[in-house]
Image (cartoon, rainbow, N blue to C red; front, side):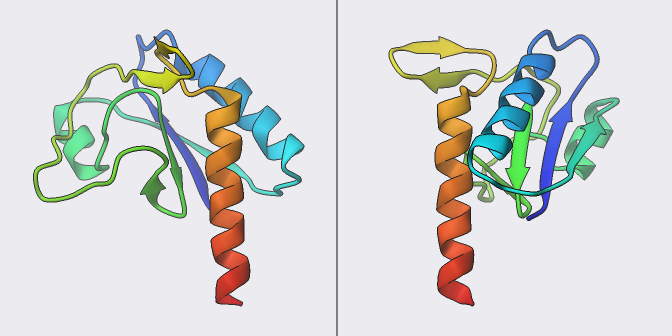
Length: 110
């Protein structure tokens, strides 16, 4: 499973997102390397389809936002709905749910 974590310098939340991602991978018994991708400027954000920092993509798809023709790529911080509050990083539970969803889809396609 291909997993990417995208961020930009100055984002205070990418380290917590990475920690939650690593723990979620372990707890779901998902073996995968995490490709950490630094986004450097607005042009880079467009080229990398960057939806904000931190972003996690599983198999090339953002774990939360469904991209379409109206998606704006830019250098901004993201907010995630984690239970009853908003945070600047995805919770471990949110990541685990998405990993399990992708794993189930992979099993169906085998």
